[in-house]
Length: 393
Ligand SMILES: Nc1ncnc2c1ncn2[C@@H]1O[C@H](COP(=O)(O)OP(=O)(O)OP(=O)(O)O)[C@@H](O)[C@H]1O
Ligand SMILES: [Mg+2]
Image (cartoon, rainbow, N blue to C red; front, side, top):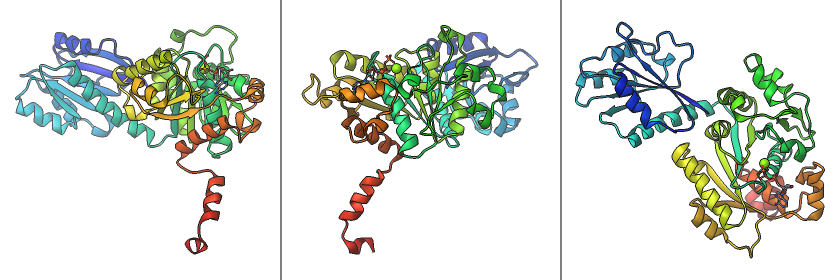
């Protein structure tokens, strides 16, 4: 999710200094608003409220803080206060304003980023409490199988775990999920973005294609080229939010490239699945991706799950080698599927429908079980049969 950040206060130069700390930072839409005399409320006259406000005060001027402190706390975005140390009055006002943090000058880049990340985490957990889980899949390299895995995990969530599930295909030019599920809608994600403001849960369904499993696919249906810059990341974030509010699971399949749209999806995701193959090049790319997620998009590492696709036991890199090279544990492996399965997936038949006992299907079921936290019916009944009668009574 793109976080709208407002940096405000009186001294323009100090504000620019703060802004410079954030140069190149993805996931934030940073605005600077110097306050003029007579206007003490940093939010005065703004059309759209920011998600976070960084308010800088000067030693002799705390009018902005006073204005904030007397405002309605519930209707104001979270505040981070910045200013000279040792000003007791400012500290008192900051506390009264419900400020999340007080940063004393001079401020280092890392202090500012850490404070922002704490607030963003708070915003995220607030937003996710009313939302379904969002699972973003991204390949460490092109062609590693992330779309196949995302499509089938989404299908299993719908058909096997019986969860209300939607999948959004962010490859707006090639729309591979439509192929994996043999599912083609008339209207799609781009049309939904156009009418976003008028969409409710019911109208939303008109822009997704319904699979017989109950899974609904939101993909691009346009024949024209779509450039990332032509699609608004903040509107996409709102569409994701809407989809997640009305379903238990939103699966997002991402192309192997990082731009505003991908960063938005990665920011909103409750779990990120990095799919890679067993090679040193893939491990290198995955390690770089993890660093980008952690250091630049500021995503907590516990949200990242690493999967090895087309895994073979005797392969060049073993699980421990991969984990060591990438810097995160391997959450699971997915074997190659055999020829007949390849044919079924090529005609758009989900793997579960083609062969639910195939090793690849079992590996994907394991991912779904890890997501839902429950074991399959089959394992339950096996366990029940194995239990001594007195334990069951
Ligand atoms: N475990 C596997 N066994 C056999 N074939 C696979 C496996 N995983 C993926 N494939 C096949 O590899 C091809 C590429 O897969 P897919 O489109 O999912 O990759 P991707 O990582 O999403 O690629 P892109 O970079 O284009 O987004 C597909 O034909 C798919 O069926
Ligand atoms: Mg793909």
